[in-house]
Image 1: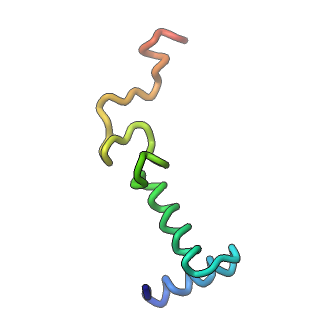
Image 2 (image 1 turned 60 degrees about the vertical axis):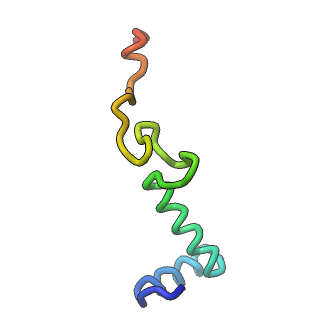
Length: 70
């Protein structure tokens, strides 16, 4: 896959900084973005308040509040 020149340069710099082959650099970059946005399958990197890519109405950030633990 060939990207625009600015992206190719960024990939080349990432490859040099991390001593990775091109495919390894692209894999790490894509995986990092997918983890950050919560799109990895199986919920890896997905915050608990996100269900099926949308905020969950059932999520309670401070469970101790509901349980009475102060």
